[in-house]
Length: 121
Image (cartoon, rainbow, N blue to C red; front, side, top):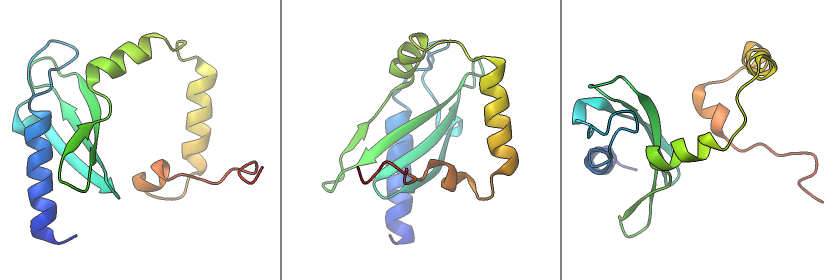
């Protein structure tokens, strides 16, 4: 992807996300609250930090071939989904700590799909 095309897509993503409301306070995000972290194939990842209440979140958007974006999970949907999950335990935190302590790679590698031993079955 050329630098100009990437820049245009990042600007469009910022524009799209600026129309999402913060799940914490309902304020819309300003352009300075949105950080486009990068993309893998057609999926773009952005971080948001509400300048009003400080709530942080991630927004995933998919770019289709005809330049339309589909927001995969808005913060409100994500918050609703998180309400149905069990609370984190100290064991969960320790498991993530142990994983990250031994992890060798960058942030992108954390989100890359890995093959499981059962994949061929």
